[in-house]
Image (cartoon, rainbow, N blue to C red; front, side, top):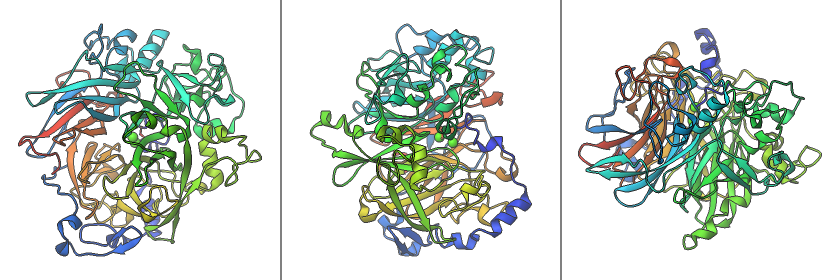
Length: 634
Ligand code: FEO
Ligand code: CA
Ligand code: CA
């Protein structure tokens, strides 16, 4: 989510129509886009322009089957899925998962203690770990708290409130079982666990122990408390869960004025917090008292969901940014590659390549793969006006590419703690808010959602560029790349735009979107992105749900399914009022898909999801299946 993020388009005035027309005149015409993306049109794959007619394709060239009837946009306060599909609520904010918990109280919305024994608020990225055909464990992020619902009095105004809010953040881990065909939360199962903003964690990798990570409470710079603003996720082939710290900056503040600090500024850290209001009650969040505490956030955290006593580990080798997700790929040669986006306007896309190789036969050896390796940031090159091109990965290693003491980086720890500053030094491409990254399950092809960017073409350092081609980009796009030689460790790649979201009813120019965007599937602000094992690409939105003006006809936030070969996109799900759809996971048989419904009714919008009536709206995970028992999406 991005409501802490001042970059959220919803906080910015929109350009009027004449501005749009003017901007569009400088962009590609819709006809040009038609030639690049879409059913039966040319595709730019693996660096080669491939043009095929749909009628001559073999089944593999046709891509995965999407055998459901797409649904229309709507603004209902419920979940809508295609004919032949069903959904049920699996778990909601406040559901008890640990012994001693108390059932959700709709009047008080619980205490700090009850919240620490229950599922946190605002479920986001999640993974499913199978324990057998009808048994598994779900790890899910709890990104932030909706104070308008968490507190009956609407704000955080005491230490008790602070502890309750801190307990609503982090990660929830819980077992689920399929009983008579229905997946059910297991309330006090062995693996259930809450990880909150106060859970003890270890910092590991090259920055651990650095002076920048030391605080009064932790003079070693290796022991941190908690994780928060955990946006999306990753899952390793050795069975661990990765949770990604995103807008951590907004949790810090101070009543005192603070000295100028370029790194704070780049990360949006300052005396004014994002309305979280922890710092008056918990000195750890007061920047005047603990100036290094924010350096201990903005990391990817690895959690073992099979051991509720294990210590979560912050992997500093993966860099400190506003992490969206961490897409893990095992390269053909065994190196582990992690792709990561930094979700802020004009920030960058990163990848980590492990120094050592994944060994399926030696699970214990894999436990440290994310501590040693090379971090890179992407530079996209473009032929002017072309929606495809080449690119390179620039190494973020101390002593290389200008990352020297003279440039402000004493050692590799400083490069990692100030990853964003290092990316600028090496010349990374500014992107339109990189959200999730998803790698194709069988091909070396990687997709990223660039959700929107009101600063594109407005701020001088964010001029239009190939993968970010529209000024005041209110709709967003999905860009993909193929590493050279299908080798994820290569420093070269080719890229193209898979989908440029838009409104083809209102616009005829680039704001109409690419050819695969139609009046029947249009959406804005793509965010969640995951492949299923058959290569269907699932897209979730966190956009403007006003269904008005530039967004007329798009309805509530939604989930779509795309065929990466043909470019076809079909709407699969529409969420309830004022929600974001985020987080998805499949059971191994792909007969159940778990989907996150985050913040229904945010800012007191009229939602009572999921209970209905006059109930308090609650973020929830739903389970979707086919009535005929078939595979979801097929
Ligand atoms: Fe938490 Fe970038 O969304
Ligand atoms: Ca997101
Ligand atoms: Ca978003």
